Length: 249
Image 1 (cartoon, rainbow, N blue to C red):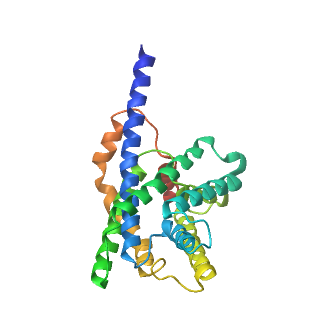
Image 2: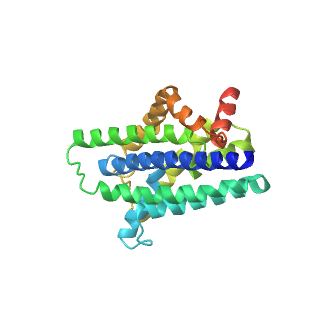
Image 3: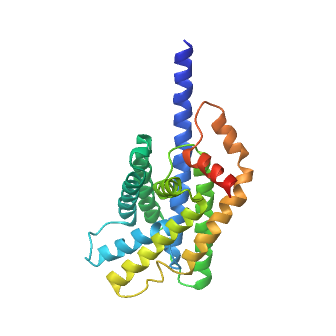
């Protein structure tokens, strides 16, 4: 009888946990869509897929959406984790592919919902960029607390941190910078120049401001933790590792 009750509790917790995760991912991708619509520069995670989607419209690569290329990028990031960790790679982390696929589809959904959003003046662009980064930061803060499998972009940072022994925060900056550099490189490869609407001032702003939003909001999410704590579960892999790394710093 106790086993049945325990199983029921875990099932309820799992459903609640991943419903909250879905909401978090929706907020994150809504922020991504706003940043793209601002034309001041997309977020870090969408910069490379954005370049490929624009190249697809010109027939240079397969004509896929930003969300589709985000899914492909997430798949590559998981493969990189496997290559880095080898036998240390935990099979449960393959669920990153599911999270990455949902993330990509939600980007396309929010790109569709914001299709009518036009930013023709700099104040309007700045306002939309600010709103997008704020919403994205809120979504990330929620996502970190959900206790589910990590996103592929964070997963590769964790893998490199584990193998190299370097702090997660520093590796995360390195990974984000690499994605932006790749986006710039492919911009020159496909279009012969820098795409400022893809990698611009807004991208730099997002790299700094989104992290600040997460940091400022996190101390006020006790209510979110209490929702999750109302049933059995486990601490997020990244969340626990990040805390450990912070102690080393």
